[in-house]
Amino acid sequence: MAANERTNLLPGPPEDDPRKTTLAWASPTDSRNPQNWPASRKWGVAILISFYALSGPMSSAMVVPAMPQMSQELGLTSETSTQLLVSAYVLCWSLGTLFWGPLSEAYGRSTLLNVGQALFLVTNSLCALEWNGTRFLVLRSVSGLVGSAPLAIGGGVMTDLWKSEERGRSLAVYTAVPLLGPALGAIIGGFVVQNVSWRWIFWGCSAFTACSLAVGLVFLTETFSPVILRREKARLLGNEFDDSGKTLLAALKKLITVDLPRPLILLGTQPIIQVLALYMAYLFGLNYLTLSTYQALWQDEYGQSVSMGSLNYISIGLGLVLGCEIAAPLNDKIYIFCKSRNKNIGVPEFRTYMMLPASLLVPLGLLWYGWSASAHLHYLMPNIGIFIYCFGLIIGFQCIQAYVLDCYPVYAASAIGALTVLRAITGCIFPIFGPVLYRGLGYGWASTLLAGIAGVIGVVAPVGLKVWGPALRARSPYASGEAKVLL
Image (cartoon, rainbow, N blue to C red; front, side):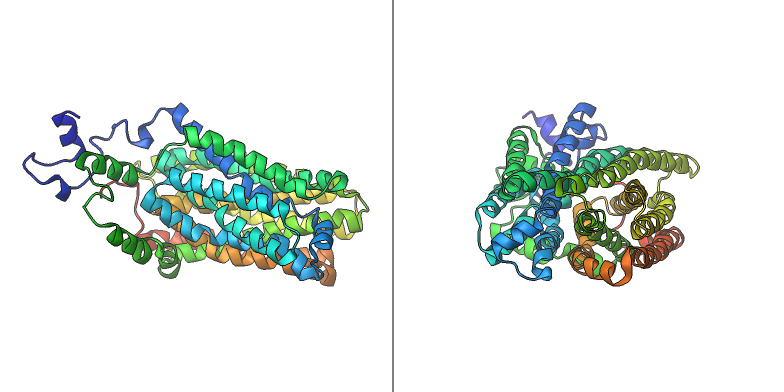
């Protein structure tokens, strides 16, 4: 490398020891910065990450139509143990983000994504071979843990690649394909279990995972700027471990004491994270309560077959995908408009405006769904209700993610990981008590209760952030505007 290139990478007088210098991009237009990559390269990475993120959600719901058959073969005798086929996976799938996010900020996005996909491929395949119920649930839990890497890291990749005002469209692509996962998994599971063994559900998911991993191993490149710069500096200085000559033991100590605890520190110290974690946890719990009980409605109340009942999941998929694709560009337009009216200064609070429609659509859809199902109206009526509910649900999800990514751009993966702690609990518990709730209160009153809670949280969260968000960010050592890559 020429001397002037080395100087650009490591600013400072040539006589200075480069190990003591600050590492940054040579200029705002440095082509090595992922935000300056060609659009085709950035979108290629975004689409690949979205397909990585499809396997986990698909696996979470594909067992729902197969639960009676699986319970019988695996010896799961109680209703709770049967619901654990979904809940155990979702719990570990959410908690896994606590590890994958901070690890990606220490060792890079691409490496962790490929490792996670490979481990998920192995554990998911082993599930197809298991006959013991206890061992199956253990494998299912481990599968969720290792399969959560795209969930934890994907939002950080979008932050790496795009600026705030461009991020909505990329989040739409990143979230649209995975959102098809639960609906697609449930539909495939319904047809598979009606015609062949439930084990083919897992073999199919593994085949898809293997294909996406093969593409990723070839084309997925690193996007996290600090890691790219550290690796480049290590290459220049011949340093094997990191940019300051630390030993591997010191790096490991930093990982354990600083990087891994960061999501819990954010959750424990940041009111913004606490509020949004509560809101997202409730929405996430509702989502999996619906996914785990939806099949029973069509089979028990409407008398449909397993395969025909699973087709009703199309309304869930349509609501999530259309909500995602409509809300994301609109969110960006609102952000750009508000930024132009604010002396061209963008703030995360511009993301709160779209949260308000979500706070109305979610309870409206739940009420429509619950009371039409309770009255046994035409099957289209509950489907319309669930479509409205899912449309509002994904708007809330997207706005929460966008707000957090704008607040914590440098620690985006850890911030997303912090959101998942409460989400893991609700994603595990809601599917377990969902059937009991619907049996005890009926679809109408149970949905009314859930809708009321959703409406209260959905209004309080955005209004509170709009009023107190700027002051909370100003006091936070983690929150900032656009990420500045200085090490």
